[in-house]
Image 1: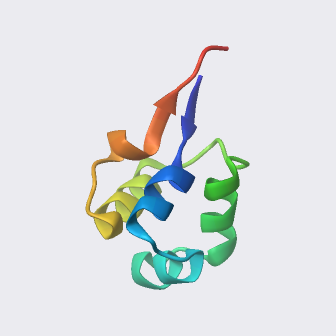
Image 2: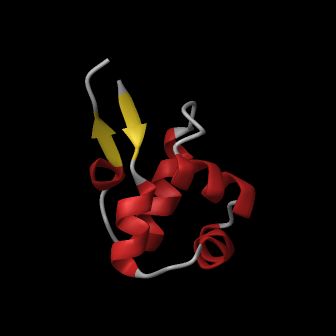
Length: 67
């Protein structure tokens, strides 16, 4: 299974959910869900927006974990 590991990247960069939402154009609710690992069905374009804002690759915010 692949999950979004936004929490690790977000805190390493020291951004708040509101800052990421404002710059990426995503809602704070979406960012919060990603940080908590609640949202599993993300569009690639959403992940690309977040990665662009955090100046990282999409691979950096995804993590594969055993089922």
